[in-house]
Image 1 (tube, one colour):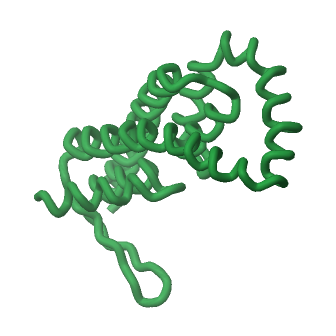
Image 2 (cartoon, helix red, strand yellow; image 1 turned 135 degrees about the vertical axis):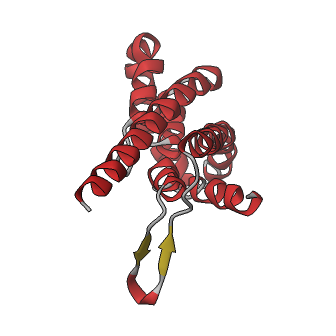
Length: 169
């Protein structure tokens, strides 16, 4: 069981996969053939266990990624071209959007993280929040809400789809 939990945790940490892949893999018990002769097999675990593991992993991911962005930007700002672009574009955008971010920031970031589509999620939410000047505490709240909403949506879609397929066959 520990190996399965670790695999779900690891899948949740992969950018663009996050909950969108880990929850269905954890819940479903089918084998899917992939290109190059590879395959992936679902684990068939109970959905509450999968939900808790994947949501907790994804929330922790956001909490770890956000502070790392600041350290990466400090290093990148030492490159003159990056510093020039940063000062001209990003800071100006932050100043213009700050009033709106203050008003709608947490809700907007939460919904962005929650949308279970490629390009959204904890990684993108952390980067967007950082660039828009949303503080760490507000990001943590937004990320947690968004991850829970995404977990609910993906779990519901997986369970519904699984039931529909069983009904057909």
